[in-house]
Length: 327
Image 1 (spheres, helix red, strand yellow):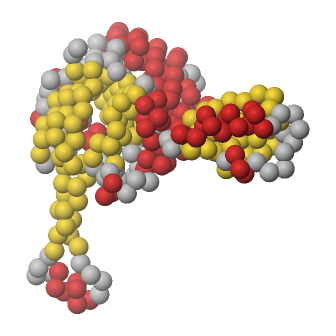
Image 2 (cartoon, helix red, strand yellow; image 1 turned 90 degrees about the horizontal axis):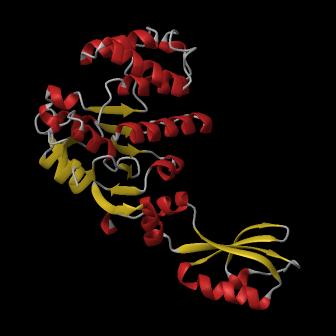
Image 3 (cartoon, rainbow, N blue to C red; image 1 turned 60 degrees about the horizontal axis):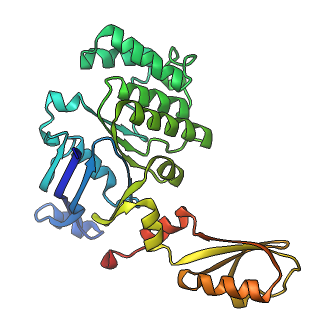
């Protein structure tokens, strides 16, 4: 098994100046500054095999973007090591940069006043792409993302979703082997999100690219990633299958059922999460799900019943709420 990304005890610490409020404290700070250490990334390790799509999850400030910046060579680590395609990212060698890309959903990389086509040509020049191969790839991506009528307009005139499509095309024209995607669907409507997810999945399958994806939209993660790495307070909290994450951190299950005759009080069976006429959804502790199901079927006239894990959004929210001391 070949590895595209290999991270070992990777660390990034910052020295941040701090002082108390007030004029006196400001004057004292001119002569003697106090600093505190912020551990943005604190001794993390993980590996990603070639061709795998991995979700990189964590709350704001957890260290996701800092990690991606170190893996793409934008930041030098404080300690530990990282290799991407057997390159040390921080050395930013030409051969390394030709094989990776970093897409940040909240950053514009294309020229604001130029049509996207002109920016694409600039990318061709930067990477020294052969004209015929470049045109074939460019036109293929334009067709897949359905932006043929937009590429001649200045980027500033495009909507957020349209700009994001152009950003992704520009970032992939050199056919990188490793994609670092930081919130690529942020702020987009559900239709745009789905199109970009489909495009990323197709790119992964067609070119065997490795993808490390951060997103606060669980639909992105569920559609693209079988494996997730959760970083919290700068440390790796979980690394494994998405289904295993749900099983490990979900303390509850939902029991949904339809009653033949409406019952007035269902609280003895569990917390009523929703009720619409004869359709009821209970939230019960995971270890009591079987017992509650048995009692419901014995005590009430139930037409149908399903037991499911909590929605992934709820599970992730509970993971992100874990205090630093317990992480």
